[in-house]
Amino acid sequence: MGLIHTEITLRNPRYPELRPIVTKALVDTGAITLCIPEHIALQLKLDELEKREVTIADGSKKFVPYVGPVQTTFENRGSFCGAMVMGNTVLLGAIAMEDMDLIISPKKQSIEVNPDSPNIPSAVVM
Image (cartoon, rainbow, N blue to C red; front, side, top):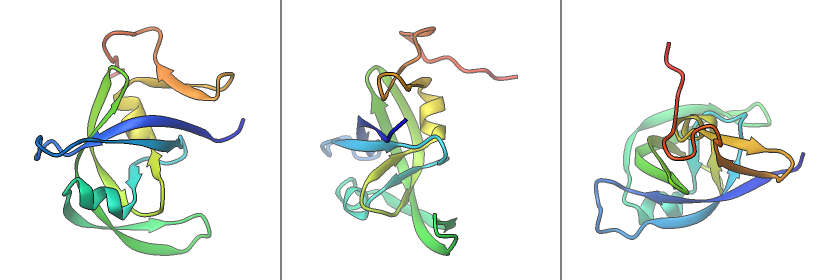
């Protein structure tokens, strides 16, 4: 299976007058959080909540800004979360995908709304 990209919309719910950003995102089930480039954080006027230490692919560690809140939308689904500001591309992690009840379709190389709950996201909470 190759890399999967999808189109998502990002907005700052604190500033509804700001235009949302429609962007291409790399889907990464190995990542937990949403990651966004600095230029998106600036355009959406996202507040830095704290610094977080991250371990990147080469094993090195660095501190990055953690910003929010960010509203993420895919088709008829939405999620609110924070985002780490790092890299040059948007990375859609597992938390937002689970929150929106999205599934990966390896055959189509895409993500899609869970067909078992097409109208309302579902979750297991026990």
